[in-house]
Image (cartoon, rainbow, N blue to C red; front, side, top):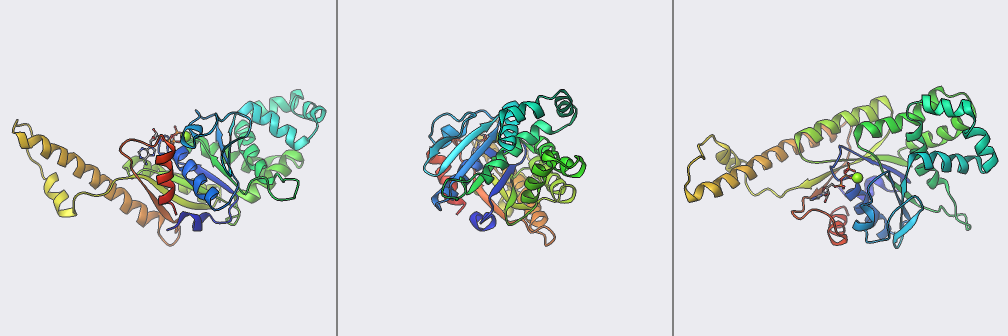
Length: 314
Ligand SMILES: Nc1ncnc2c1ncn2[C@@H]1O[C@H](COP(=O)(O)OP(=O)(O)OP(=O)(O)O)[C@@H](O)[C@H]1O
Ligand SMILES: [Mg+2]
């Protein structure tokens, strides 16, 4: 399925998945797709080592928003700075910010409230969806939030929910409420799950989906399976290669055979992972669209390689 269909019109996309599965790579590829459709895109990462500037061949990405390419901006959000900046943006006035955020009681509330720094980062990213240019148009059409991996991402999303559910009426509650109503609205926002076609990342994807769907009630817009290898063997060839045999001999053909066996094993793992994902995520109660990104032998560390992935998403 064409990814842009699944995410069309959504203004906030939260990309998450197991550590190292390709969240940042996918963020860069999606940014290229959306920018090519004329959308103004903001890629927001959290405390990440700066990979976006390499992938999109732009200036270093720090705490200030920078332009990486036409229509693609980026920012790296740090928790303390985010809390301060978000507080300032919300409260507009430095004195008011100081009165509220540097109040001893408020400060200890922050320290004692799990997830508040996370909420500040997420809240700042969300805030950018609300910014307007002088002509009244949104400053950014889409915010791609390159979120932390699974557990941290869930903690981060629990932040606004806890505030919505528990905080007394007031500014903090109001702002969290606004963000939360956007996050839970499938026409405006969605989670993009990124995974690899391997056993553990797939298991984690299902757990993540359950938490997002059942516990938090958030829409999952898309599942992207990254690092897919093209099958070299048919199912019967795979079976033949994986039949038990002794490869400890030193015949010349054994090494080639061992390489074939390794490849067949990897293909089998991938096949099983893809079947689980298609049956599980594609089931009628979930029907999350799947998209696939190919594995690139040399990694994805250049603009050329990420552009190639972007083409696969359209
Ligand atoms: N399709 C692919 N083919 C080959 N290598 C890939 C592919 N996608 C990503 N990689 C490689 O995997 C590594 C991790 O990618 P990336 O940084 O996007 O993952 P991440 O999920 O953002 O990681 P983290 O959890 O650390 O933020 C990188 O070295 C990248 O080159
Ligand atoms: Mg990353």
